[in-house]
Image (cartoon, rainbow, N blue to C red; front, side, top):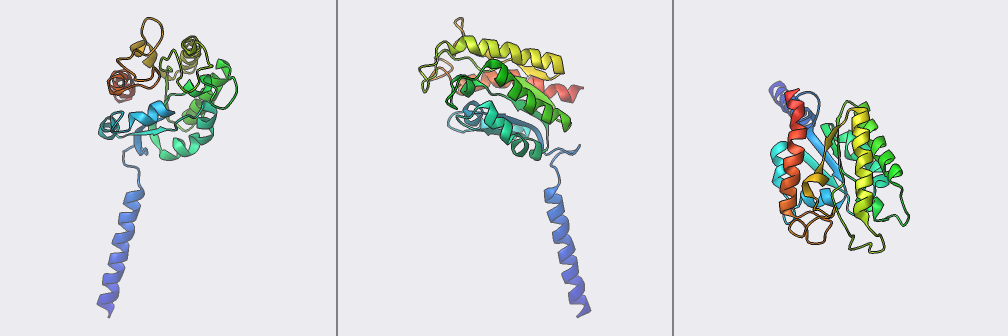
Length: 220
């Protein structure tokens, strides 16, 4: 009987050890993911097999969390659950397209968008997470918000504020816009089917921009 009890006890101890091991961060240093990408549909599509490159995330231990149609105010409210609680080493913040498109039913000044991004960045930095801010990808029109005129101009204005924020706070910066935009500030048809959402070729270019920025932490 005692042998049976010892065996049962051993099984319970092993099961508990396995459970604890499963709950541990996957990486040394106390973080679970190398990076969490948070954004809107541009991030959401990036992790889809039919539209993006999910292997890019799997191969580098990145987590892509995109919320289609959502503004930076929405992302800000989800930031703790989406990023902080995931325990990443780095966070990549890309948002602002849907603010400019007035998806919440109102005009949003670029300064307010910048402030929302700043709030997320400060929250991450306060937890020891390295922050990477991204320029908003180019677009000359929004197929779902045709009343918004010349978004390419507003995007450029916002990107200047995001870059200034990164410089001021010492955050890393990934400039997707410069890598993707045509001479008129739009997203060319070779890189998008609707002028706003990147296709697989565009994501390849974006990966070439963001990967060296994220790998800087390894060389530090």
